[in-house]
Length: 144
Ligand SMILES: [Zn+2]
Image (cartoon, rainbow, N blue to C red; front, side, top):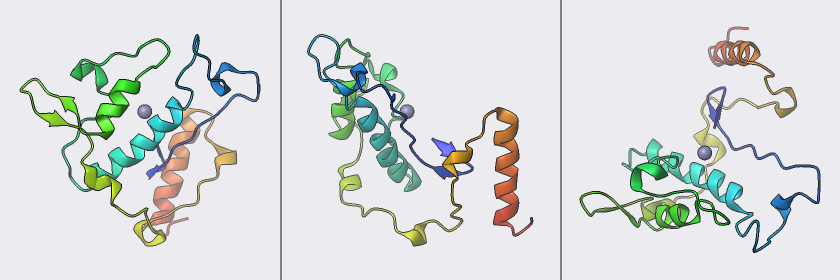
């Protein structure tokens, strides 16, 4: 996701410890880690796109014939996405270039216009979100 121009992943989990999301159960949920895999893959997707690699969008699974399945969700898509094993209409294999696994994690110097995100003050509505966006743009240019 993108908040005020900063890429981030924010995963909210239910407070209810009995939620199925915390449970591996062969009848209802065999891939509880899916949300974490999904957000992590967005990070890898972003790393390659920022380096101008031509890779499929993580959300475009249906374009390539994948479907969300009962119990395992999009596990097949994620597997093929990570192993560059998605077959296109002309028979080519696409997905994440494996160079992504050799790139170092970002350093502080990679964030030229880093802004501390106050997650306790997440925008409650679109108006606040837009106001926050302008506030941060003004801060970047040193205008208060
Ligand atoms: Zn997503």
